[in-house]
Image (tube, rainbow, N blue to C red; front, side, top):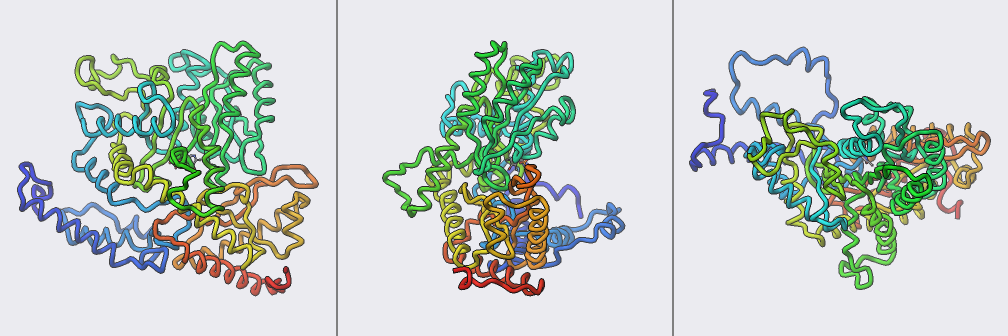
Length: 549
Ligand SMILES: *Cc1c(COP(=O)(O)O)cnc(C)c1O
């Protein structure tokens, strides 16, 4: 293999293009050959023997031909989950064709989003996308700013960096003082815990209990914030979650902002604690703030419309936050990594901007107009291009269709389970979204006992075990249908000890554009059969639908 033959053309020659297209076609053919719309996983072995892989992997002395590479790539694809109608595992979406073209553009131009001199494409796409999203969110596009970063986790970290400088100016230079605290809910994503590791410390994260709808308890938040302030602490970050990872609970961001403003007044604080809305999971439902719920042009049925109204009412509050993050690689149908971070006031980015004399190689004054010295990354992926591609080709309506349909399917799934298999309960029945958390019970008495908060710690733990068995069984058969599972789908207060105990559940995350309302029947029957199978193996009498009434 001539190593010089392995590059795209320099002059746009048709011959080279044809060669490249043939390679792409081969790649697509190989992946397609492994697809089966009735299964959730591509054909081939799922398990990998990593020790064996380590032992047999060596850089070859001489380069291998592309055929060998295709064999490897095909082997990589084997056994991967794939977003058919039966993939309900997690927030892994099916990247759209436009978004793949966007990614490919970034790759073909080898775009580095750090500086417009290095990639005008990345800069243009980012500026345009940020402006579009500012408008959708309800930020002033002229005042707001933002960038794409390495994940929802990166978004939280970005918010925290700004918050630290607000609460303790000069921390970047002098180090972080030891009286900084962060607030978040007990159901927030673990990202914040990673973000505080290098400075603030996880001990300084105060996690607030959640309400029945899985949102943060604001009374407790206020109390704990007062406590910290009165004891001389400073608040670096209040992290609200707009769509928790498992239960899709949406915090009342408006309410949180009001508490912050009140406390600033009451205690005459000389800074305003930074409020970040983590919309990694749910943020894109912001598109429904543009939906005409009275005319209902997409003709959602009554229940779905009600659910969407509720989501929208809550999610629209994120515009009160000082910064927001939204993952396009979750519900936005783009490939990884594609995470938007936005600030309401672009001046906030100055708080974390590099001093230009620290980076003589790039972004020098007078050379280039767009240099993102305020990001945590140095070189940065031009993922804005992929997000932009979806925004342009889906439009507001396209996003509403796709995201509304996930809710529609969720509503249907819950209704069907209720009649078909009433001992599979929906843990997060108070919130809607694309996720249903399923928790099974041996019998109705046990279920009611727990749902009414009368279960003792020991009983909750026993039901946790039962659910572990349930999703183990689902896991074994995941090639057919793939569900997720979680050990903390919600917190339940034990009747005896009054502790909030994390509960196990199965996650049905409807996120494939290929799941239709007709498929819900098959899905719920499958769940019911799995439940019955488990009960049969446990040698317990299955309480039928009839006997429950
Ligand atoms: C997934 C998720 C994150 C982390 O996002 P990554 O893109 O995986 O880094 C943060 N917050 C919430 C609520 C999430 O669901």
